[in-house]
Image 1 (spheres, rainbow, N blue to C red):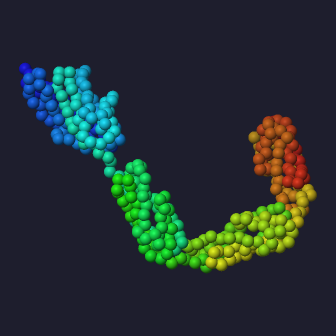
Image 2: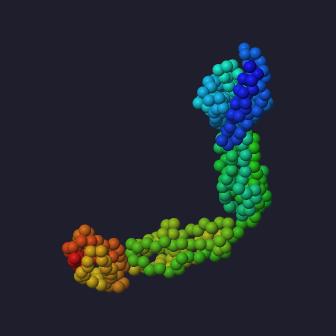
Image 3: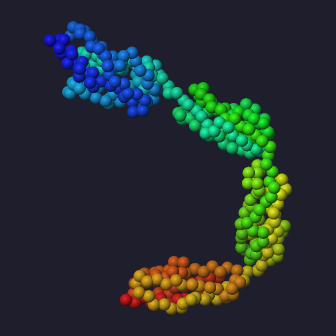
Length: 363
């Protein structure tokens, strides 16, 4: 009778016993049952001699005895400094060996010893070879499989390529050097850096070589260098007369009437010049509209166009507003009829000159 019970029990356990990790481990339960007296423990190992787990991971022990519905059992852990068990999960908290034992109500024990170790840390670079010109700077990005611990950076020849502890490298002089990054577990990755002679700026080009501004107006000068792969692309701007036109980081501000020259120069002396003519502002004297009255039905729209006189006014910007947006709204000069009624659309210049268009909305 004992023999038949043991065989039936073992068949159910064999069908259900497993330990799995969602990312690392799936071990099927196999083993042998030894026929013993009822007061002697029977040990059925999980898949033989052992398995390796990683520290700081959670492993599920799903339905360990699912083949024996309703069967009561206890789970014990031999070393809580290595792993803990709670609610069907094995949580590894340290390193070393730990034995997981499942004890059935009838005394049958299923045990397995696991070796828990720190996960392997891999480190690499996006590229293992980079070309730089003398004076160039770049940040190297280390790809680490585990984001634990501090990385240590070093250069085989800091006179050629230096590196700080954030992976920022600077090409010092022509030659070749190897940058190495090291993890706290001793894993390393290397990137070879070849430094060539610096590429000089041959010319400076500007988005404008001549511009006319009214007093108070501003203009942004944009400078580029050729060749585009020059080592040092930095540019500096200066004004021949800051009282007429001042410049800061390429932004030119007209100060008073007259002429000034903005020079944009590279560090190796290549330059380009923009002539800035500053004139006294010309005020808007009148605002003209393409319509001074219009009749619309709800849902219809009309584009109101405004212009200023004189045509050479310095600031030609115009702003539109509605006296009753529930009757007629306006956006960038586009009038939209909303409901029956009247509304006045006012078009105003920056210096206060304005014109009005009366909008009548009918059924």
